[in-house]
Image (cartoon, rainbow, N blue to C red; front, side, top):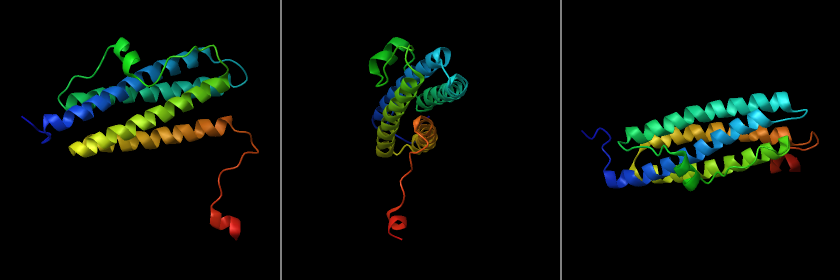
Length: 169
């Protein structure tokens, strides 16, 4: 039974991109766990809690992405060795400063957001509305987390952009 009403030849690229995203999220998840365990310094309490929040969210998304691949009637990649080969996210030592950890996570967010957009493009080509919808909510979540982490690392003197109209008024 083809409950999806999408041909396999259109789904294969979507599944490939979802598996890349699954790999990215899996390596990202483990990096967050490592940072959670190893963060030190004055920001320990804030970042220890934030890293846990982020890895908990990543764990849920890992499961949902794998289940989306299964919904599309394919098997998700599930070997960590394969994740390390295909992920754009790379392992790093946890023996870095808190600010370096946040910079690393923000860099990972850029890579994950890029992969989500590639996944949306493949899903649009296939007419896969379920994957498009899933990615849209993921993008909003990750952009908000990125904004918060970016705000955390700024100085209080830093300002957000002001609309050009307000500058000329």
